[in-house]
Image (cartoon, rainbow, N blue to C red; front, side):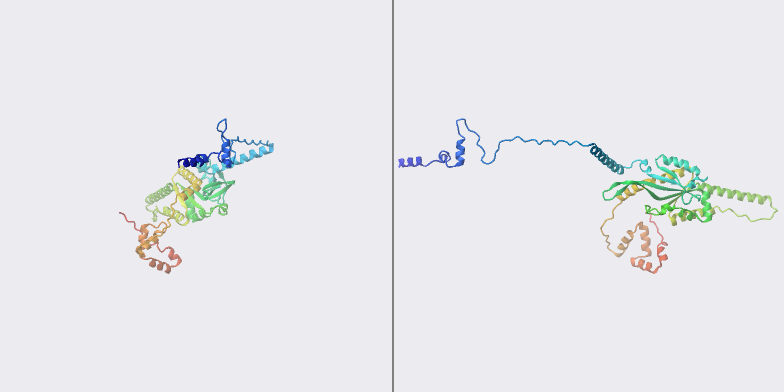
Length: 398
């Protein structure tokens, strides 16, 4: 029994013997592994599928630079200069305007030949020096109303770029353009103002003084904005009043000296007659024709005003763009109210410049919207314009 067991164990190979290549010569893998054993020790077996021997990378040969001809070098240099010039044009168009001269250098101030009149010639030289100090251009040219006594100033602008609202950048133009501004400034003295008021042609003299080239200019989208600058009006009216008082006193003195002569009724000087006419004419210009009236006491004040108007005209495009950017956007939400009266008030609040005191006056006179609408339908076109004019607006003081 013991001998059988020993014979069986000697005839059956163990697992270690099964892995020996000498017992399995038919296996190609084991045969290859067996060949690696030699007298010189173990060697790394060769790979079965891929060759893993390290190979030195072959450096790509650097292409030789072709030598440019003289024409090609000149063309390349010209293209580079064009790119630099275009980049500089965009940089100049979008740079921040920090100084007054940055915008004034693009402004052209055209003075009418009426400034050569003896009454306004003292104003020309100081104003010209002040504008030239800010690098603005000043030109003298006869306009359509050169025979009038009012001096007129119009403005032009050198446009080198246009604002692109999509890119939010100033895009430089290929060619410089000259654009006329809608602002017209009229300068006069009290003597000429009173003569125009007595002739009853003050409004026509200002409203019709727009040069035809400005009226036909397609770049001027808005109507002309007139500004009337009057120099020394209060002092002149005071002198006229003093002259009337002196004349009245002289008449009384002569009457007392000739007491026996025939007595003639004396006419008292009306102190407010001339002032009322002037105020009425100025108010008519402001309310009916949208003319801004500036009264200055002395020459220096007039020069400062004209220079300030020129500066405002030069910076106007950038100011409008800044205001448009900072303008609050209307919310898209709908306004709801609980009652009919609150809805009526909310509708009136949507009207621009309709303040709460005006809303209270409207709702007191017309309690409901249907009442206001029915009253408006019964009115004619002229009556509907002045429907709310008689309402008395009272401001509540708390």
